[in-house]
Image (cartoon, rainbow over all chains, first blue to last red; front, side):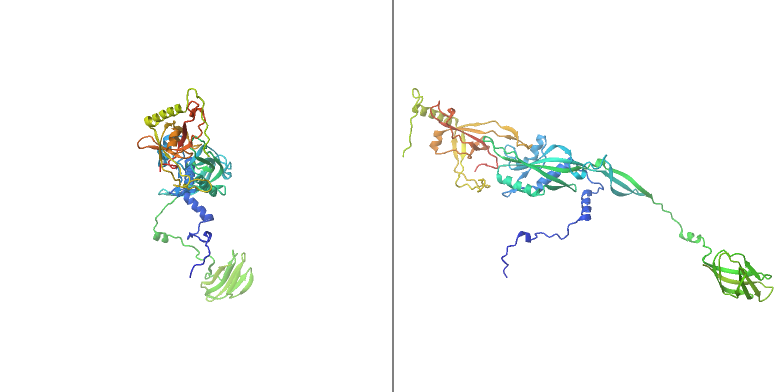
Length: 354
Length: 171
């Protein structure tokens, strides 16, 4: 069957589908931290002027790449300084017969002065270079286990002004570059990625410095002014302080010996015990002056006892009673009638603390 | 209708048309025969050259040329100028302009005209050629300098600026 003759717009076609969904929120923050800490250090890497300049160059080379009639417009991939011989080496690959830079090309000029930053998130918020906790890193020196606390101060905000200049002969080259810049900065700002950190760049102004002179070679020069809202992170300011440490002591003991010397608990079961009343051959009455606890007595058995009579606080309680309850402070008396007079006897109860 | 000609009678007591012809022919012989400075003129074929509709700029390789013509004249190359490209820090040694003076009668004999925007090639050495773009075709010759003692204009001075290598580098 023939395909329908309905135009399929580009917006209806997804040329690439991400099989792994992009990370968001906390996972994304973790990912950014990994970028910052990669190459095995627990601390972020320094971000200094040269790094910011390098980030700007990478941004211009990558994001503002301009192609006209199938040819890329060359970019001077260094920031030109006052070092003349350096300029020659940086532009050797697109020079003409006079060793002048061949048009068209794009170059990045950094204004030498770097001012205190205007990025509101880092401006004048923390005084006196106070150090802040950054990471807790476990340590082990073979004997001692511990942690080091890594602290860093608040980064210093800086504003760096750049002028990106396109120098060319043709209007179409100007137009294409202008389109690229305006599309990239349609939200006024764009970001470059420097050592794992996104640094914003905002566009300020576009100006023209074209040479329009009858008796001179004519060419267009357009200047795009950008400000990078960067910040300086200096690893010289990082501090590593030891935190808690713990000594691990290992002692070998013989478990057999330890088991044999273990103290026996007595009484084994303090809640229950034998309440044994012993009568000598000449005795037939036992008085427990005062009971110090509250207990329940259950008769276990008797020996050489015909009958026994129970008195609590001198009140008759009963004869041959098998269950007796005593309270703290009670006077407990048991009188017996022996089966064989002149022999010893006993009455045995199981006592349970209540 | 025939072109209306007006005889030039100034300086008539001691100078006239024959003297003018003689002197210019002698100068031409010196310049073209003895000096023999030669440039190559690349005239743009303004009919065949493709340009865009808005800016009139030609696409890559879109400029078409008429057959190159060798011209003999008086060549002056001005001194180069070291400068920076605008406020960029890119320095360059800008080659000087080409000033090229040529007898008008010579151009008339060849049936060649030099126009604004044409390219001129000048061999500095056997292997090195530099190209220039005509910035002033010297068509206006009314000043005293271009006349023979005030009698009649007899030569043109063309000023051409160096052409970038990506702009023109021979056909």
